[in-house]
Amino acid sequence: MKGRLIYLMGPSGAGKDSLLLAAREPLQARGCRIARRVITRSAEAVGEDALAVTEAEFERLRRNGAFALDWQANGLHYGISRQIDDWLAAGEDVLVNGSRGYLSEAHRRYPQLQPVLLTVALPVLRERLLARGRESPEEIEARLVRNQQFQSAAEQDEAQLLDNSGALEQTVQRLLQLIDQARACA
Image (cartoon, rainbow, N blue to C red; front, side, top):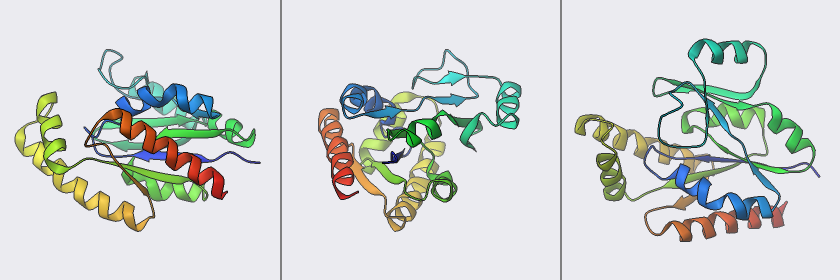
């Protein structure tokens, strides 16, 4: 049986990195790998466990076919190693931290992918973004508007909604339930 691609997406500040860290062990116990992203940002940047590369190195990797998926968002380049194709072919499930704006392209490449949209109540998301201190209040408000637009579009793409407004442990359990339910239906 071929593995499934689980495509996690959500707005900046929704807690994707925290969720992936907290869910790593129970996902591995279920035979689900988490793909590490390649990103054009400083290796010292706080956030997910990603491989940081320069733009020139990213472009070289892209030209050489190193990525199964790659996109640009928020002034950065993101890539997912084509190693995921080997894992999927071996029957392993793979979870990727994807981009909402790239979902349709990822769906074309992997028609059976399971989209999961991590959502957060607007006041909670605003508070998290303000606490990070990376953006101005105007940039944050623009992100919040964009978030509402993407959420509507993702719902039309039949993405599973996963609310992360409360305790992280509850979100981890709900993610595991979504994955288990999808496996049972396959």
